[in-house]
Image (cartoon, rainbow, N blue to C red; front, side, top):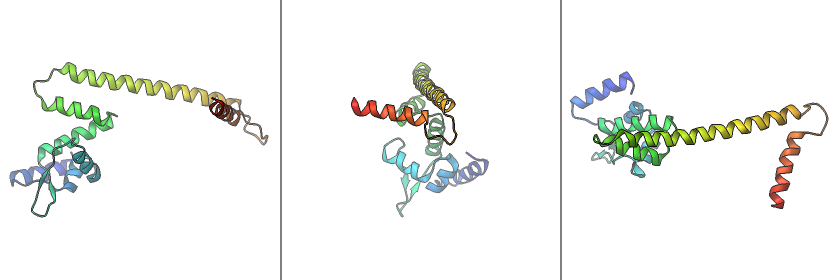
Length: 154
């Protein structure tokens, strides 16, 4: 949360007011559209609604939105975030459960990195084999076409 958002939140908190969705978005770093989405899928509790049916967010919800934003930045899935939020809300949780979620996500990230490195190596090899001149023959296109033939035959 930015310094100005914290100041605004602090001023409103002492007045007993809640923040609008725009203010909650600015304070948490989560867009208004995503805030509504997280509410619709039950990731966050529905906020208080005013007489005008506008959503009003209390500091706890804004803190949760910041938590979600950081978890998304780290690539956690919505399912993992749901688990992490539940663990975070439970002050008696064993940290081993949190670590298990983090390590499972790390293993998935490592597998993705390995896959991307293999693709990069393969494409680097194909690019090195291509003359890149005026000739029409191209090992890159030949490789792509060969895979297409295998897929059609298979």
